[in-house]
Image 1 (cartoon, rainbow, N blue to C red):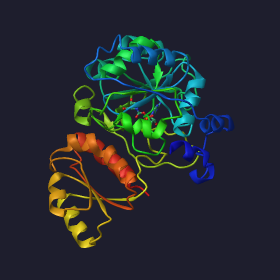
Image 2: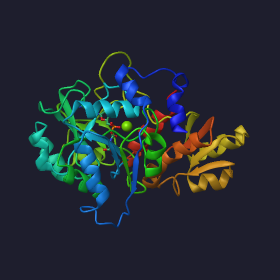
Image 3: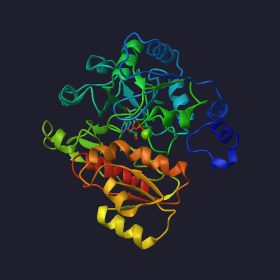
Length: 367
Ligand code: TXA
Ligand code: MG
């Protein structure tokens, strides 16, 4: 299905801005993707698929791999060509910068200017779902950073990501492993759906833990700014950076390179129209609409009350934002699978992890 989609160029509605002719040529080529399933209980450090992935990355080709947040699409961060391949495989505009991943703090100063604040943040929250933006060193090509003089740095905690990064022994540039504009993949099957035939290898290790992308923290400014909320919350960061602020999430247009992630480009969007309601409002709105084609993304209690024809269980109840965060992107993908035109999605209290959940859900609802 994906290959047919690739050949039907006009149906894609034009190429995203920033994609150059030779990138289009790479995009239209299909390749055999090696898909390796790894059991979560395996010995990762010596696993043949992990060692193979490290070799593929070092050669400049792309590997999709699990992290504790979402799956990443990795390429060698020291090679401009690998960055170009990433943008082409995702259909992503090349001025939207990539996050550079390494296994441990000791590697960061090889490619970024570490400062005292960054060391404190990374010592406290990494490995884990935090990304810090720092001044870059010359070894990182501008293709990786979308032309910026800064670089986003992340140390993922997922054991497969850790093992692969250690074996590769290079910094790995990795955006989320989805086609640009679609929800980030939280399962190996989502990655295969989007990228099979477009990249060299996929490591499938089942469902992600957090389910939303990492918190992005800009440490090139004073006070530090959260550019994208995630599982490391404002309150968590305030413990060590008392003056940290949550940045705006407005959508930019025009030629400006995005300072904050997702500010310029539409994200997370299913094809249908997303409406957001709290638990009680959702039940009332669904019943008033009396349209069995409406899809509900909601907690078990909402689904029980509405008994919809199409429903995706996000969480147990309105307090269960951890499960809702974990399942939101799968729910948005479910909407596309069944061709949903109108979607009623449940809001959760915008505090703690709920800030990140509502940030992504609001983006999914932008038309
Ligand atoms: O959890 C995650 O962060 C996942 C996993 C794979 O690590 N990665 C991820 O990457 O979500 P991506 O490319 O989908 O989102 C990274 C965001 C982009 O929206 C980008 O704008 C922002 O981080 N970013 C990257 N480099 C930046 C920089 N130098 N300055 C400001 N923002 C930056
Ligand atoms: Mg992404």
